[in-house]
Length: 197
Image 1 (cartoon, rainbow, N blue to C red):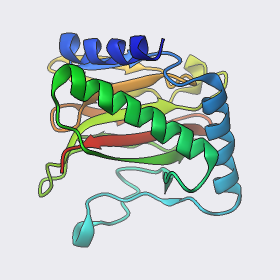
Image 2 (tube, one colour; image 1 turned 120 degrees about the vertical axis):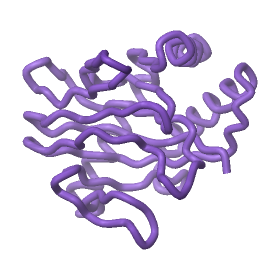
Image 3 (cartoon, helix red, strand yellow; image 1 turned 90 degrees about the horizontal axis):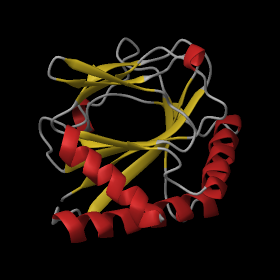
């Protein structure tokens, strides 16, 4: 079952430049991660995200409005379980596609009502380590009227993905423009990158 989810993401990437699959992570892990994000948020441990890196890193509310917290294996059992699941995906990806991925980074993200992330790519101009982007949604009972859709830009085509709980979306960090449309309620996710460093 786990490998079927992995294969569906990879096949989507190869066939149409992005993969998306519902229920990517087990429901128990999804629920634990959602509660962990909410606990961090309630404790004031999530901080406004910025753009750029190192000396060019800056907060830019005109571009993005989410608050984030980086995941670490030793932070909580939920994070450990999720990152071990990601490691299994990386092992499968490397075995089947010879990608040479040897690192990763992921963060929790919460968009409050009205916030967004304008069109962008996930690759830095001065650091090409990020090879693949992976987003996993933690929202309960998300409906179309809640908005907050992920838009993926493919040439002249725009793909719209509703951020339903458990859904994962996978694409190349250096090739795919994407954006998060303004949301009408708190939008919860984990976003991250599979890297070659």
